[in-house]
Length: 96
Image (cartoon, rainbow, N blue to C red):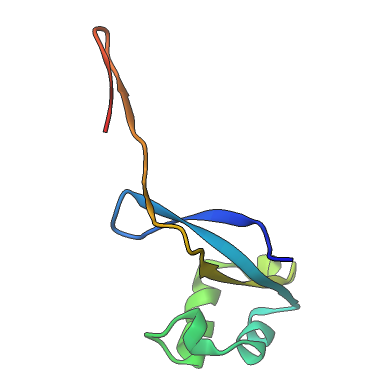
């Protein structure tokens, strides 16, 4: 049975696409996450040590102590969908 589809934003656009969650894996800390996953799948533009340093500048040690998760997704086969935006003013409602 396939995992249920979810939605994901496409960076730099107002579009979203459906995704399937393939795997969710818990790790006790950021180092274990990067040791257990392929670092280029986490961030293809930075090496493992740089990624670890970057993550630790964002999250305090007490947050890291809570554990981490890796979520593997794939784009679902459906076409990407343009996000529906609604503008409301006193005279009309328009969709774009």
